[in-house]
Amino acid sequence: MKVTIQFLGAAGTVTGSKYLLSVGRRKFLIDCGLFQGPDELKERNWQRLPIDANEIEKVILTHAHIDHIGYLPKLHKDGFSGPVLCTPGTAEITRLSLPDSGRLQEEYADYVNKKNLTKHRPALPLYDERDAEAAGRLLEAHGYDKEISLGGGCIVRFRRAGHILGSAFVEFFLPDGRLIVFGGDLGRPNQPIIRDPEILTHADYLLVESTYGDRVHPADPPQQAILRMVKQVCESGGMLVIPSFAIGRTQDVLYYLRDLESHGECEPIPVWVDSPMAIDATSIYVRNQDDHDLDMEALVDEGRNPLRAANVTFVRGRDQSKALNKRPGPGIIISSSGMASGGRITHHLLSRLPDQRNVILFVGFQAEGTLGRELVEGRSPVTILGEEVEVKARVEMIASLSAHADSNEIMDWLSGFQSPPKRTFIVHGEPHASEALQSRIERELAWNTTIPEYGERVDLN
Image (cartoon, rainbow, N blue to C red; front, side, top):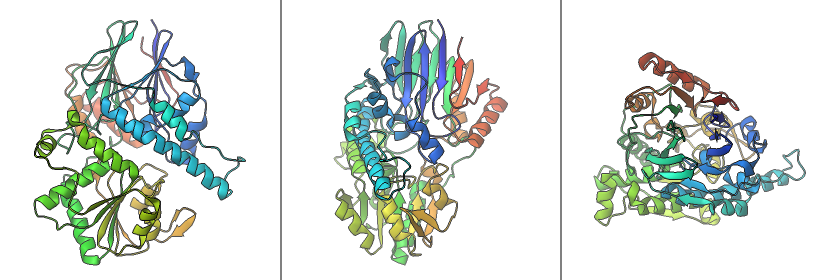
């Protein structure tokens, strides 16, 4: 039986994760992500897949970040109607985030039509909110560590990846007994809220991410870095503006702020969480106790909300969001998106960047071609919503808050394998990061590795 993997995303880039697994005539798609970042990457979202959507039997998700799930509505719109397998946490977050993605697609199309910034007349969204809600109805939730029969001798099992709530490694057992592990995004040990990544011991074929394959996160505890930024805006009277991913990173920041307050290291300071999706995701994080680590469990058992500092206001309405731009400091605004590539954060940056009293704090990876990347690299002026803005605010980044394993942590996780995979595919990284990780794996572990190219098909026979 012929088995192939085709790399339809997260190859040479960190976005658009899609792996087409063909087992004989059967087709499975592992992850179904949206491309983000530069226009040349986003243009791929409009290109036809090398397979008709209705030929795909099942989709299997590693976790609910948009670069892993955001293409689902388009796939469904094009004819896919099979089940989408994932963990319960991933199902909840996906049903939350996909409609938001649909709304953003519609709003962007309206914006470029209004501003006459499109070659198409009119520009249309990739999909809309209704398409996204329909795709959400295809989700089929399964717990960790349970074998799920796909029929024909194929079996799937989800293992904890420790990246965000519900995140998993996908173990795919072929009919002949061989095991393919789709790594998704690898989390970090000893992080708040969710359990550590499970150590896996065997795979015939392994796909491992390389987002931070070329670097090591600072050892500086993230809560101390946050404390320094809070103290700075308290002294300057400015705002600490945190572009944050609505799912995962926002909850981490809220956890650390509550922890600092509870230990008396930080006086309560007004905090606004300006992201309806982040607000709903925070409730999901508190509710899904099967994912909680021991510290999180203990706080919940004590009847305390681990993600609620003293002066937190959750902002849903647009008028309330706009009013924040006139609020005097000191205070903290947490808003998405995390790479400042869209969403409400762009309005806050437009307002706060020209004021030297403010601090802009990035708390996650900034992909090439995003506004976040331009800011952390020190560019000024920058263009936001068509306006040129001088950057006078202080721009900082806390790499130690990343939910992605760094180079050392990836190598530590790989060292848990009792024997080398026949082949290890290094994916989900910019070229220099993937090449650096490949060099380490080959030098330190002597494994057979490949960095696949976008669109490449590999025969596993």
